[in-house]
Every structure is written in C-alpha cells, then in structure tokens.
Image 1 (cartoon, one colour):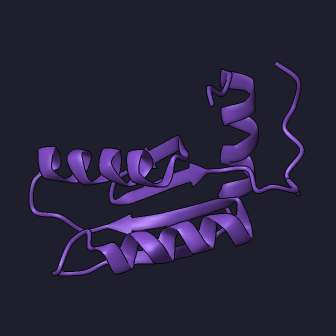
Image 2: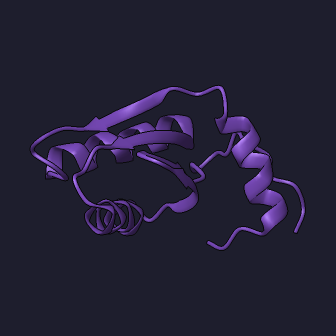
Length: 98
C-alpha cells in the first residue's frame, strides 16, 4: 500500500495525540514484540512504536524491519517514535482521496 502525502498528513494529525502502544526494550525486536505490534495494528490501525537504540543506523534498520514484517506503512518517524498504519479488514479510519 502506498500513501499519498495528503493521506500521510491526515494520518500524522490523527497520530499526534496518541501514546506509544509498544516500546522496544533491551531485547530488541523479537517475535513476541512483532506479534504485539501486529495485534495492536489489527485493533487500532494506526499506532506509535517507541524504538530505543544506540545508533541511528540500527534504529533505522529496526524501524524498517517492523514495517516489513507487519506489512504496514510507515507514516512518520521522529526521533525514537515510529508511526505506522495498516488498515484492518473493516477499516475505521477513512483516508482522504488520492
């Protein structure tokens, strides 16, 4: 799924008041964490994930892995926070037209 800039801006506005649903700890990206992120995505569609990492490159790799493994779309990443979107079978978030 590819989002237009207008759709990303809309989702960014919706995500602004949200708190991080999942936080990665010292163990990093595990199967359990991925399962929790996938579960949260199926329930909420739009979530924030807090990724704490030592290096910028490592953090980018982890964020890309999260997006790839969950088949979601990266809406935004600022600092340690990643905002991702994945529509559920019955979407509750109505995206603007392309």
